Amino acid sequence: MMPGPVSQRIVLDRLAWVTRMTAEIAALPLDDEATFLANDHNSYVAESCLRRALEALLDIGRHILAKQAGQGAVEYKEIARRMGEMGVLSAEDTARLRLMAGYRNRLVHFYHEITPNELYEICRTQLGDVNAVADGFRAWLGANPDMVDDHL
Image 1 (cartoon, rainbow, N blue to C red):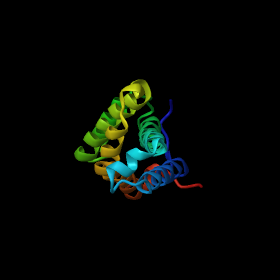
Image 2 (cartoon, rainbow, N blue to C red; image 1 turned 90 degrees about the vertical axis):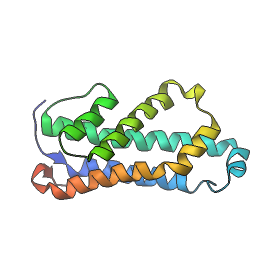
Image 3 (cartoon, helix red, strand yellow; image 1 turned 90 degrees about the horizontal axis):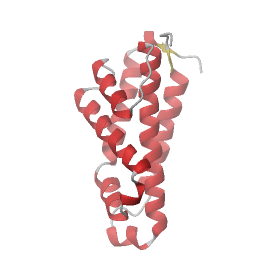
């Protein structure tokens, strides 16, 4: 891989995806666990949207890693670690993304172990972490115009 500028179009597209997915989750009845759990549809939406939001964040990291360092990453946790090393994300956001990478793997590979109660609690209490990492990527994009191809 040859290093080059980060595509603003790709990053903004994935950030829009995160925004859309977190909005779908926020529209669920997260203020009342019994209401959330009363309809299986809620946990299906929560799982799908959460997984897609996490994958979009990790896709952003993978794109930045490929373009800025000319390297690929095989594991999602590696993407998170490299975003911290490269100064793309703060230490706090790097730690968040690393945990999210692990949870994304659980959603995909151990989906049968994840309960509706667990999804409810994560969506109710940790959705802000997803948005914080997205904001970290937005901040990096805005602070590094010289590293970004802004042709949309």
